[in-house]
Length: 279
Image (tube, rainbow, N blue to C red; front, side, top):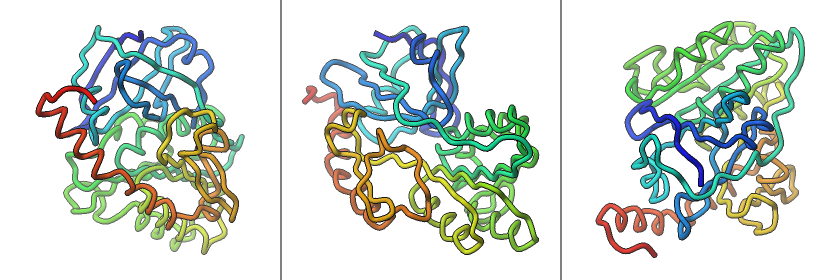
């Protein structure tokens, strides 16, 4: 069992929890993820590691309530426990050294998933531009934390309620058209957002990586549930990723697979909210 050491609400339906998991914390690197189960009969879900503290032996994750498991997780409080917390899984991000110019672009909860890369890049001495976005001001997260690390922070909202009005890809286009250059772009967030960023950077020949979060079960490459097509080849996000060359990802296929179990997820969440027996 793994104890919840701290919990914070970041925005509507988005919260951050710190889990006591010394072995995971000891080896966690930027870009990696964990798989957890809330209880013995629960499903296994992957979540990106937002931060880790080797000395405290804790791992921090950020969760958006979307289905039954994330709803159950949101109901946990400090001192409660969860059944399983396995990791770190996946490959760490391949990051440049020295004076490289990197743009880190986060949308929604992807903003939190991007935090460890920004933190590591800053420690390596890179010039880091961070662009974050959300639908409205109320859904923006981690502005202050990222602002302390970034050489430049740009905030966008779809409705213009805060920062620049528009998408994060629009902000990137403005920078590139103004003559800005980047050695690397990292984009983490909704599939639509990552595809938009990839479409922009491909035209400028900028190496771009995205973090994929398809359906996943075991996290070891055995079930095949997280298969993705990259460069015309089948890859498994859990062991070959979760990060891939954005210009080689088959986003159309990913969009289709992401929608496979939406009805079942909605039904499971509704059953939980009505306090029906576990299935």
